Image (cartoon, rainbow, N blue to C red; front, top):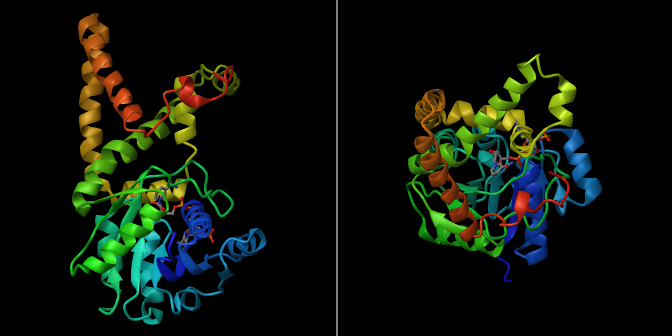
Length: 306
Ligand code: NAP
């Protein structure tokens, strides 16, 4: 693969940044990758495991001379980071981010960036419930979508280059408007996470079912919720607070449908329940056909683990 940027700086060295680093290196997409993380502990781990060619002690040192700077910190930390690095950014550099919410990040970051840089927000739809500098892996973005969310003033060259970069890391890319992005993600990710957190919380609150029973007899449905509910609390707190309107809109609709199903169960309306479950089952088939998950039973986990 050809080098796409001479120097890339990753600010924040968690799951997404570390996966980007391993992918950039494997595909040789940059001559140098520089990293910065807020805590000494994370910077030391990064140095120890060889995450980034260079790890700097300050964010301003890290962005010095960078052609692409990617903000890989929680959504509500993006604005502060942008403010800090702004005076040190090179002219014609591209600044991007990987935040899970776009309208809020655009508002917070844009106001700090100087006019001589191009801001091209992005969001890779790829992740796991793991976090931190040791959780990344080069294949994370393979065959996953990355949404590129251009903002005014648009620089088509900067957008095309960032798109080529994500495609070189194995992603499929699509251009999207920030509000549409936030609504789509509220449906596909933010509301489902909140529901999973709630379901696990309910099990925890139920004193009639002991902790041991919840753990020992955990059936596949509940276990899948616990995997989602193990996601990083800071990251998800920030997502719920910053994609408030879309998340509340989807939760409102969810509650209505839940009440309808609750009623169908109470009055014994089997047809309604069966029709609903048949419709939702076809969505799973669509996801598999689109190559976004495995068709193997139990998500491809080893036999006997269910
Ligand atoms: P992560 O593994 O938890 O890493 C977060 C990084 O941000 C760490 O290096 C942390 O530094 C730094 N950080 C935390 N709070 C900060 C603050 N207040 N100021 C400056 N730096 C701070 O997170 P991640 O999963 O890579 O997520 C990073 C971004 O990607 C988030 O915006 C998230 O919404 C987005 N995203 C996540 C996923 C996913 O599934 N995980 C998927 C797509 C997009 P220290 O380690 O030094 O504390």
